[in-house]
Structure formats: C-alpha cells, structure tokens
Image: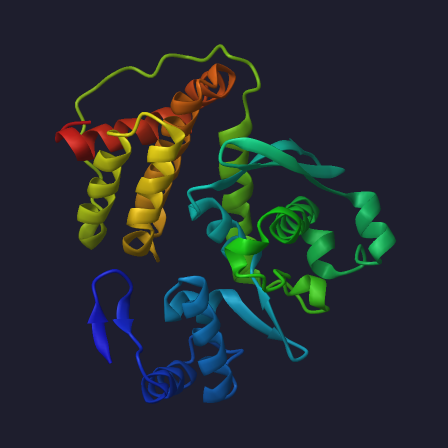
Length: 294
C-alpha cells in the first residue's frame, strides 16, 4: 500500500484491498458493506472507473446482487470527462430533459417524465413521492450514460439503485439536490444577453495537491489552436487528471468547453457559455491559477 498524491492511498495488491475493505466495514461509515469481500468488489470497480476507494464505497451499491451507482457518481463521471457533458433543457415537476454533447457536438436528448415513471410503476415509492424532480433527473442521467456515454463507464451498465429495485440512498438524494441546483444554474439562460460579471481582484482557489496538475493542463489547453491539438493535449494529460474532483474538475471542464468551442469557431456555443455565470466565474478562477490573480 503506497501513497498516491492524486487519490490518497493507492491499493496495489489484493491484500491492500482486503485490508482497506475490512477497515471500511469496521468503521461503520458504510452500512451497506456487510462483508469485506463486498467492499473489495466496490473498490475494484471504482478503480476501473478512475475513482478512489472512499468514493467507490460511498457511490457504488449492491442491489439484489447487482452493482449500481448513485446518480451523483454517474453525473460526476460524465462531466469530468473532457469530451462529454450535458445541459438541462427542461426541469419541472412533470419532466426532466437533458441535451447531451460529445466534443461539443449534440448527440441526442435524454428525457424522463412523470408519465414514464407511472408506466414504470415507481410513483408509489417513497423517494418518488418525496423527490419527483430529483428522481426524474436521476433517470435522465442514467439513461444518458447508457445511451451516449457508455465508454465513460468502460461499457459497464450504469444503473442507479432505484432502477434495480432498491432505494436511492438518502445521502444521494441530498446530493442530487445539488445536481439539480447546479444544472439549473448552468442551463438557466437560453438567450445571449447576460449581466456583466464585474472584474475584481481575487485570490486563486485553493486546490491543494491538485493545483499543479490543474495548472499544467490549463496552460497546455491555452496553447492549442485546433481540435487536433486539443485532443492530443487531452490524451497527454488524461492519466494525470484521473480522480480529479470538486472545483479543479469544474475549472477544467469549463476551460475545455471554451477551448473546443473557440477552436471550432462555434459562436453560438460561445455566446451561451458567456451568458452562463457559472462558466464565467470558472474561467476567472482558471485565469487566477495561470496568471496568479483572478
């Protein structure tokens, strides 16, 4: 067992996995890990997806002998991939619809409605009664993962716990609220007018040990002028960016979208992003990291 600067402890042997899984079981933090062997499987699948052991233990669930992922983990894996993202087109108490993109190009919609839930016979479930919008969002996300982003999951079926007959854990429902709020903010404006974000002097965000790899990738992206150069840069840095989470991941995602739209001359996409306050603030954070002020 060694220290990995990107994702904490690096579990390199089956003995490491077993030791960590036993510790996880005994800790009491993961109540669905009833046996160390179950923890080993979760951790190993997480490693194959490029996530750390604690994230795997938290976001991967055993539902009737099948592995499922939380909707928040599915969303995170899609959005951290530099070629993939989605936008929320509609989100009401009746329906949620996402527009999915690869390399900045739309590949199709993912829509789930309250009528779809009624047809599936899930409206009587307590989580659907309490959180219908979040559950429709979860279904739209998991459908998008299977339809358009299967390679992000190495071909493994991306199902949520609820889809496999279990209950979406309460912690995932709480986190789903954040996805809903974030998605609304990111897709709120379909027009090109937006308030100007006033420039100010900021301190760069504290990314801890992630700072160097984020800055290195940002600088490399800003040297690219063509799609081919961007793809080559993404491939060159893909290994070093594995496991990146939080603010660093979001900064990189928005910077990649900006660079790709600029290289493609996609003015419509640029206009939409410039009308998105989340994107503008993320670019300001990127400037702060690269230049020293934000």
